[in-house]
Length: 479
Image 1 (cartoon, rainbow, N blue to C red):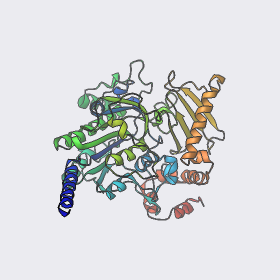
Image 2: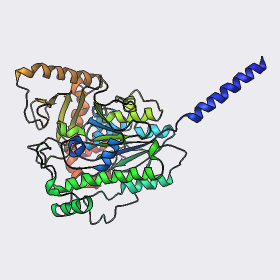
Image 3: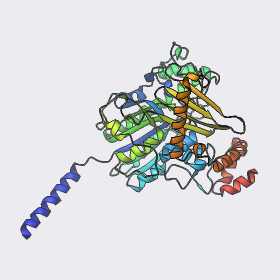
Image 4: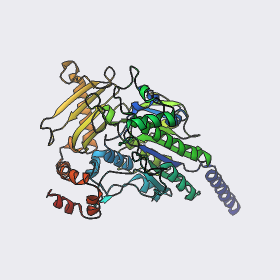
């Protein structure tokens, strides 16, 4: 009897050992977040002739997302939503650009660190915002900012921090026995941009691009921007290529899940024709997104399902074998990318909702869209006393030039989308749907007083850092 038991225990031991030995290592995670680019700025989406070869490589050797959206068309709330895996309206003061992300919200890098990952970052993280006693910086891990770009004194329009070089420094120092998470916050193509003459020269010399021939063809997006913007799009793409090449050189690319996403749409140029960054329109929150995980994700696929930036955190956690906190409202798309399917895949991903509260002035709006129609509600605020509703048929009017809200033919579509918006809003605690607006209204008042101080420079932010938020409000005259 003892002999049989011993034999069974040994067999179980060797079986478990074999399973553990055969289990693939947990993936490394690289999240590349750029600043201010809409999806249509890349040729691969079919509305531009600006080629971004390194973004295209991620898409062609992995997955291109046709309908990727951020939670808000404004950098700080958008990045807070990415980090927490929650809609921006769930984040209290974190829903507002220039405010703060409360410490009560756990962020992705911290969860990964608590589960054996090395976490590090470089470039633009969460922000811009303030850091009172109740707030956090958003990013957790070791910062890498020592390496600067060459001649940064002569190129003040670019972020002086060399994100790819700092990523390489992290790879040199990391513990190879542990998986890593790295946030690569590329500041480009956020303005300011190089002037016209320099931008045209650099486009030609560095990328072989004629500035006069960008986006001139019929059917391309109507929002023609200065050549400096396009130079910075290509610079961000080049930085992406350097990081991917570094992983490949070190033999790490095969087991690294790489995601590239913009934090919000591109800047209006001119605002009368196009509706981008800070706005409730498609150009504000519809962003470029591609993913590559060689050996684990079948390549060369295009996914049409609506995917939100808040889905990244639960996807990373599931890929890492880490439980997803129940507080995260984002939904993992891991099963979808591991499949061999393209096009529309998950019937539940047939709509998307986003919105905004503040971006240098009140931007109180919510947007919901399905495969064809987009409903927008702009709420009353200090600069607009009335509620405004808009409705667009994106199948025939993708640039949102013809508001159908007063056309009785579309009344049923409006009501359907409106009901869906508020059902999801109530489900996720959106004050614009629940009516619990005390905190939002108070924060909007604070932002109006904070913005002039913020514009004066960093000294004000230094004074309020680490001090109670109530003290700052009192000094601003908000209490």
